[in-house]
Image (cartoon, rainbow, N blue to C red; front, top):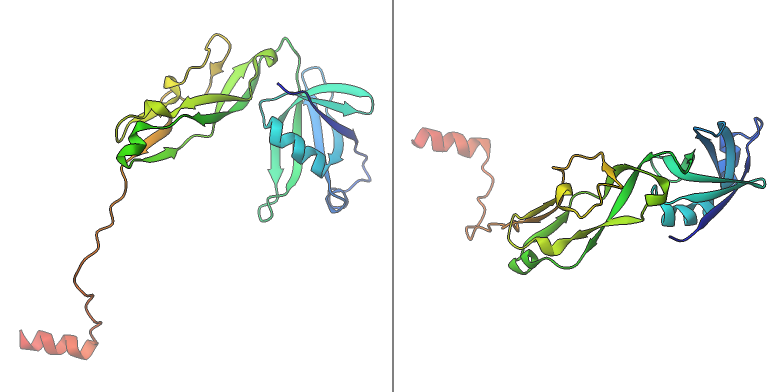
Length: 208
């Protein structure tokens, strides 16, 4: 995997979160089993570029004032309207300690069911696993060619994941992809009835 680095500096008590965000900085915290909890800050655009490559499953080398720390993105907070990052939690790993993270799914190949006009629905985007840092991967592949008929599905249990390296924490029965039947919209040839006023409705009742 590509080596990713991210420069950071310590955050001081006088650095308000609002001022940092106005200056396109992100407040964050780094902590771990052997790492004291430390408030830090880094450039917004630098983090965005790194996160787009790392997500939660790739190790980032955090350069914190000449101190190199290997971390994973553990939690992110976003502004509910703009979806801008507002705070990041980074977990400092130790090479001998198993960790829990989410690994994204990569959908590959074509489905035979698609030729039968099936709608291929990708229902799950990531899987929660526990593994050693050395075994981390960017993603797990999902082979859509397993979907051969309408209503065929692929579950987590169908994926080729090395269970000696990865302890799967997500339910094995979770459906990852589905060849759903196309929805058929029935269009009536009859013209819609004109709205009936209350007076006309009363008259029809009296006629009956």
